[in-house]
Length: 211
Image (cartoon, rainbow, N blue to C red; front, side):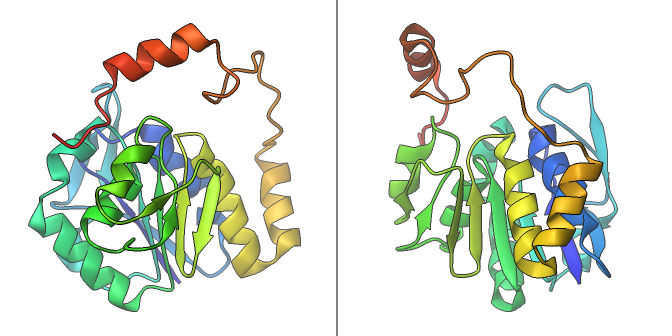
């Protein structure tokens, strides 16, 4: 089974690496990082580069598609090279997935019409503009489409899908070996739990808009 993780300039690193470290442990699978052109692709900080092994055109029919989010997503909402690739890959994929604002790219490609989906909490309303039904859940399954909320939820998505495909015990083994046992020092990981002034501050500065 081939897993294609999409890269683009200014993607968020954990959006891609979380599924890589979890879903990428699927038995008898190959994980390939893809971008419009093969070569290094810089994350949103500019300090980290991940190498795209192949160009999009070289991987037309992956079994699993993973689309990360990140600030660079805004510049790709009308990029027909990527959107056409997503549509083509989706025609034959077993699973089409996203993390964070990657769901906006799936939606822009017309793949989430009428489907329940999630995204970063600041981007949920934007999903409506493309016909998706936004939900604040951390991981959402709707048919073969699996969307994850913000950044760290890509780890949960990867483990959840891994369990669906390879069985609960294999997913539990991966969770154990990666020692994924979250015990955060603060209970501020969602807008429902974080201090209200922080939520409002980020809402006012949000770039998760379609203008």
